[in-house]
Image (cartoon, rainbow, N blue to C red; front, top):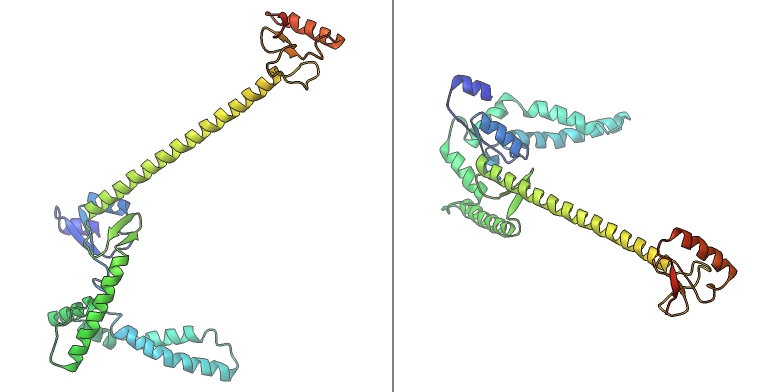
Length: 285
């Protein structure tokens, strides 16, 4: 489409209006369109469905035909001893061929006011869709006005509870015409917020890792400290600062008062003295 537009209208920007499909409103699509001088604008919700041709005569006709045709196909299948699981599909195919005829499609153009163009019909359908119907002199007009007021009140109540709608990666507000630049700014803001959240998550993860490593080191230091305060002869008694223990000046070897004078203690003390450069001064006080 952009190539054809550029060929026919060189240097002329293209303004393209569309619905709020998430694929159309993605940042990648908007950026690609802007690079080709195509400006995408998105209409508010329910802005064009009242002019949809299929919602006029064609769908009304096919629904009417489908009910009657489906019943006929189901009865035929039952009386002929066949399964009825394909009756609806066959009836839909048959009803579609009968409903989508040139006469019915032409009538849909006329009833919606699209061709030949009938501004009065288009505006009346727009006012009815928005719930704005001018009061008339007939009973039908008065009833339509009352129904329109009820619908408008219901819409106002729903708008209070739902102020926005999420489409793709960009959050947009209801009841507004959105430009590509605003949507790109919203996408960049959301990307910055996600990056900030990711940075916070990484920082918290690093803090948890450091805390875990510090706790592991603290546990290891506690194990080593308990080992240094335990009697190296019996491996049971733990030095709690009292006297009578034989303590090496390096602080890494000690023997309790019960074990320091035994024969086994002498051998262990001699072995430690050979490997330690500090040595013993005597029993601790």
